[in-house]
Image (cartoon, rainbow, N blue to C red; front, side):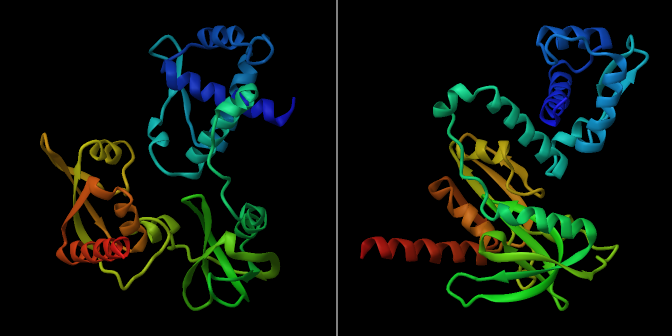
Length: 299
């Protein structure tokens, strides 16, 4: 069987359990045959167990059997769908890919965003991360001369349709955008990432990818108006986001974060739908930015 068809079966199994919660193997097989997942052929217990193991390895989704509930299977860790892990992202991507492949006749009626830039370097960088090997890259920042540099690749992060590499230069951590890389090659030089270093923890105090230790932690209070409140609720900006007050006119959200350029830019994208209440220095910074923008339009 082609790998693509097997992946589609994995995705189908995960999604059917997300919809129906608990299913016996017989009930699952009825759905499987009815929807012609494998050309109408039944789902054997052996195949199901093999797929269960693969789903656990690839997506971190645990399918367990509840012997006290007529041997019904269910997703034992539904929280896996609530975080920003690679497994969840891969599951979402493959799910959408499967839906779109089945809807090729509608290609003119399904509008997507551009593919993330710099993806041609992903395979080499992922291989380097897996093997703990340094990479040699050519890099050119906007408005600067290009240069070559050897770095230890620690992690990759996708943000606003761009891939970014978190790397250690030998002296400090640095962020490189893949769409500004000129070339990437694997070196023979190995490295060892510190056992106590966590890329998730490194980015935890920030929104986006731009990190700056000189920007102090702040308790940010943002007031949202109208439908903007719902955008914040349905897609939180940061893991520290909390809804602290709700009225008929507005909703206040708090953040414990380092308010760097990425976070400020995201707040500005909501234009009149938000107001920064605290801290005062961040409020003043936004006031100055908005004043500068207004002066340009006046000119």
